[in-house]
Length: 242
Picture 1: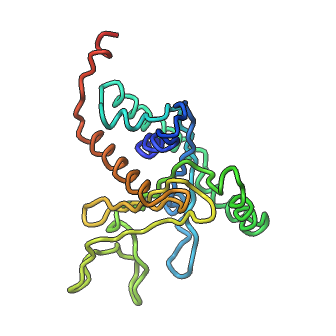
Picture 2 (picture 1 turned 120 degrees about the vertical axis):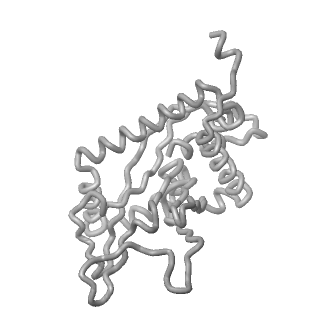
Picture 3 (picture 1 turned 90 degrees about the vertical axis):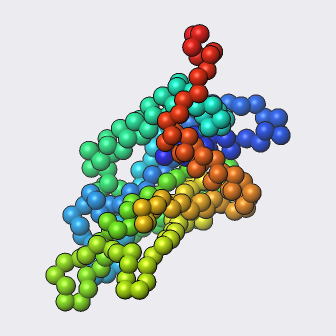
């Protein structure tokens, strides 16, 4: 979520348009697997919606904050990155402690059955101001594939963990995406760990975001993860003199 929020700062304005950089707050959609918080109501016997989300409010950040960190990861910029990551963690923990995941499922159920959520999504998508984009960015991390429980096999006593090897067949790659077609995030990314590798799917809204911009966003996002993970610090003499 931290890397997403900072990468988005580089795509808020068109440099060639001559628009001055400003500081903005960002709302990041963090998808959650409600099975981790509920009473495991999903027994694998029927279709069930066990998904939910949590809004992270982050900022303000100046336009171009992500680019500055990628190109020159000074100690101060890296420190700000990890402070932001801790803030995101604290917001998530607060959400969990107060029963947010369970209530989120109830609110979603209420909205679908009584509040006509589908019509609300339709009206939001018609907005000329937001084009249905309620969030700057969003992250869905499905976790490690091999740690997910499969459906019960006939005659089995319990649900086994998913396997990447099935006889002579092996899963090498597995990509998925949570749709944001009608409403949702401007820059969503879905990810899952398979075979010990992190798999990312970038699927922003077209035509609001072009394929060229999407490719650049994906490259910049992954570059930021690599820069932060490397731990390498660039010495900035201006910071040392302050």
